Length: 116
Image (tube, rainbow, N blue to C red; front, side, top):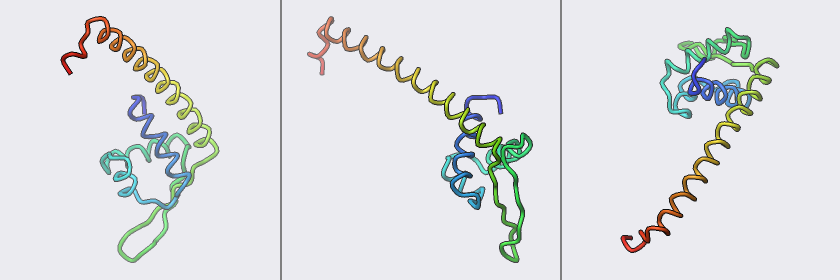
């Protein structure tokens, strides 16, 4: 999971699993707006890195059900990803504020309000 997109998915998955270890992959995908395959891949990567433990159990005669237990290593990773995500979003916020100020000055300077 190298891209910022995948790191954000990992952060959101760890948060989701910490809140509900019995959530289905289908529900994860629906809540996050990503494909079921992406969820499956990310869960396997999280398990491979020791951030979650996947427990299998028979919930019904037709389907296997899973529980996803976030490990202490996973909780530490979630905290780290959250902190890094927050830093990125704060930088984006500051850049947007700068652009708004610049555009406002341009509107005032060029008297562009008359076109609205």
